[in-house]
Length: 545
Image 1 (spheres, rainbow, N blue to C red):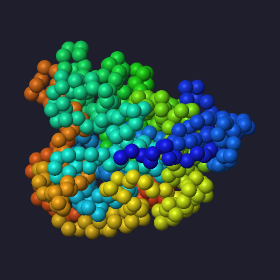
Image 2: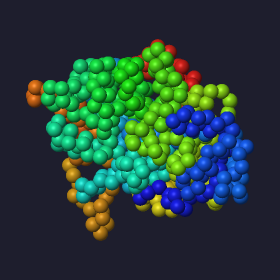
Image 3: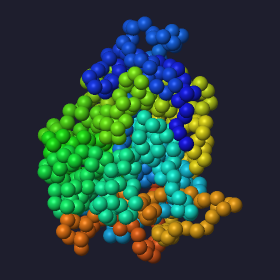
Image 4: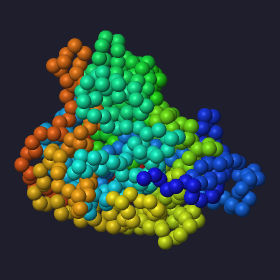
């Protein structure tokens, strides 16, 4: 199911400061975006005569600064209903904190998500809630919610936010975030998979020790020959050295940086100075709310602090590019998305105000500063005033006062909505998830690692969330290749299959709030995180609150 058909999209114009993120980094202090049927037709100074076809269109004054919609290259979206984890100790690689080695992981992640993912009432509520959360943080593209059925088939939930894995648009080639088990364990098959015409966004080298780095080293399948092409986009890359980054660049690879998650779990993040020096193309991802930011707007602040700690590695303009133009380049979308240019898709985020440096304004923006989000030419979130001006039917708008977002509204109406979610409101999704998480004090269901055979009514498939970090679904999120010359040594990784331990009672949990600025539980937990560099949590709290 595609996004709303752009052929039916409205014709309108937005006025404000325009940060184009085009090849010239043009910024119009007072400009107008002319949008029709999901496409940006013109970008002109406000004093210019209206272009042909827009004489009867009065530009809507946003009183803000417009940027390309934010493109997130890594997020385990279904888990974004869970609250931030108070990380108990410093870890050295992914194996140490995930799976059965960590009792809290089952209590806080696998148990609750196992309940929500299987519940026919909660599953669509998860999809609705996390998509709304993305929009509220200015994200217009992310990784999609995967669904897995009892017949073994998989499909992607498609809604209002663009999905890198299912675009239905030849100008936006689809990326993949999973590979078959056999491709994950055989270097030659993995290389053959990389030579297909799809970007692969895969976890790579998660941690800080030699065992974590071995996941990258294992990409060398013969001396001097690497299973790396321009299609490999490595997520995290935390322990990589300057030499490793040079190898990545020489073979065309790029990376996704998730600094907050890295710092929370491992006490350090990727050597971004070495990555920049090597010329690695970098995108951003907030990872998940369990050990990361609530959204990409927050992750920009974590990236700014991490950059400063590394010696002012990136300018704010470069950080904004990671979430717009450079992310589009990584996906091969840079001729259609990631900039506010004529002929590009109309994905726009507007931040209130027009003062100060245009790039710093976005990096420093708080969630309450997001005044408008447009996806494919449709206003989806923003101030109630702007949403009313840009929405044909005010009855389509849903206010967000109960989420401590006064004067903010969503338009979640989709004429061809995914049947999993349909017309579910955010309010109803919130109610369902709040109730489900508050009533977890029953024995946790065992993790089901076997394919299901039961059918739904009249033999229809029964869909559930494909929780790849909990149960195997026939695909991998990371390569698991043996080291060169050591077929007996396969770098370790999180084990999600095998017999589940006897279920233990779960404890009631609270639904993660949509925004950080008013979520004192989140801010308190963040500031108290023990693995963050000194004062990092307090400084990040100040930027978010």
